Length: 302
Image (cartoon, rainbow, N blue to C red; front, side, top):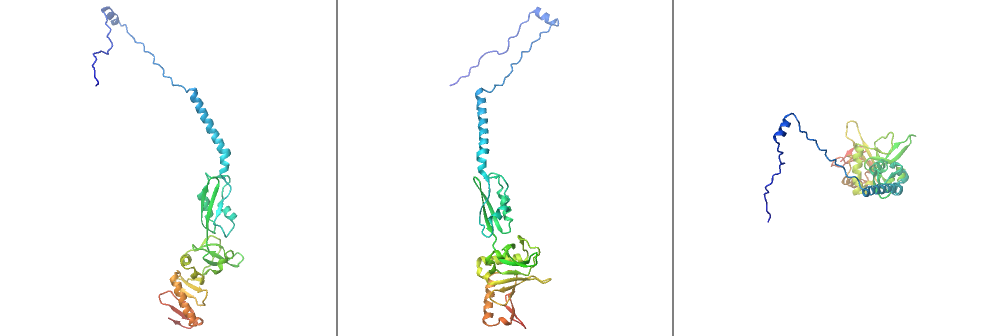
């Protein structure tokens, strides 16, 4: 149990008693001045010798660590090339030159996104990804473009040459460098001037190639059954498509967007025409509507 005690104490300074003579002197214009006492100066405590030694030791350690990093560790992280996977149709050295890898670049400051963008600009590259692997490896994974059709264009000497085009409409390489290009359909009805690899076909041709790519994914045998896809365009009229089958001599007119069901129906009708011996008399088969129409060389029948 605590107690609180009230102390009867006066903390005021005792008054000085002046006698009559002292009062008289003060009243005779004498002044009593108090001399101010100087304040004590506060002095900051200085660093001890032990603290100074600790600071110096820390600075020396940091300097040693930095020197070790630049002399021993940093050279081990320098990237001298690319580790490439996914390239099979052209030289990897060509791809490395497209990467534009800077000189004296290191693992910690290499711009992987910029290098991937540079590689993707190569006409034969559909996509590229770049991964940093410590201490000094830059791994590149490439997806090459796959030829879906062949287009023809004249070169500077006036000679007509075949070139590969992919599902995105990108003309990317000579057809002579792809043995399988001989089995692909030829896309005609367009004139390419000043061809350069990386050129992208647009409009009707882009839509046609996109539909052709879907058919290749579900039924690639139907692609092999087509010899040529010719886009026909007349002034003021929508574009149409003439399909030239590989096994039959009768061209088929249809809308310029394909689907697997339509191509299967086309093959069935052509089988009937071939079986009935009507091929020599038919000029073309028309599948633009739900009604199958064939045009003979003298008349039109349905």
